Length: 230
Ligand code: CA
Image 1 (cartoon, helix red, strand yellow):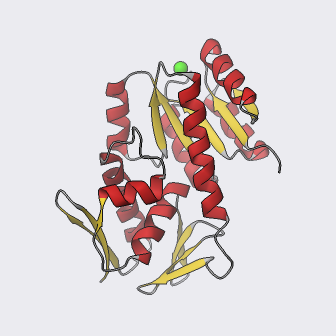
Image 2 (cartoon, helix red, strand yellow):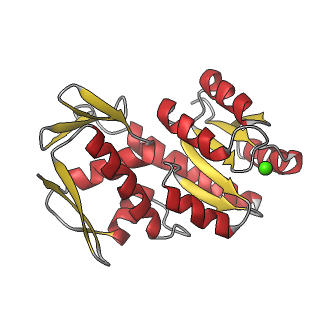
């Protein structure tokens, strides 16, 4: 099997070198871009499985790069923030990044996050045939395109949003706790704060509204979420 492709978008040469070295040592095919524009260009031709994206880039903000990436690419996006306060801000924005890591981090930590993404991706792609689409409440989820479709209208979901909505839709009408959701959707729950679930549910609600899918994600305060037909 071909090595997974990792795109590092990072303007700090030292950080970029560290990331590149540890990821290549772990067996991945790594490319590096020093600016947001270069990163977006490279993402189109290289088609990465995972993007490691610095928030503070010299040209385009990492936040805008993240938005463009999630609209055009099925890659998992790991955002790298300068400090934990910045991470809180990022979570609040709900940009569709799949995970966050704060500098400084160890090479092992980075490789572990990437490996966890790739395991999730594998599970996502290797579902048996016949499960390429999931119908719920006059809408359906299309696994091949990672889209939510209703009446010919469709909206693109990030890999993580797709997985989350699929999990909730499969359990239609049943309350799922944040812990269950984290375990199933995030796979590796170590260090993932539970509010990450809230951020992604908020993003999903917007997309559900965009195609006017007749479903509702209800939150049960302090416990979790449930998908209901409207
Ligand atoms: Ca930077």
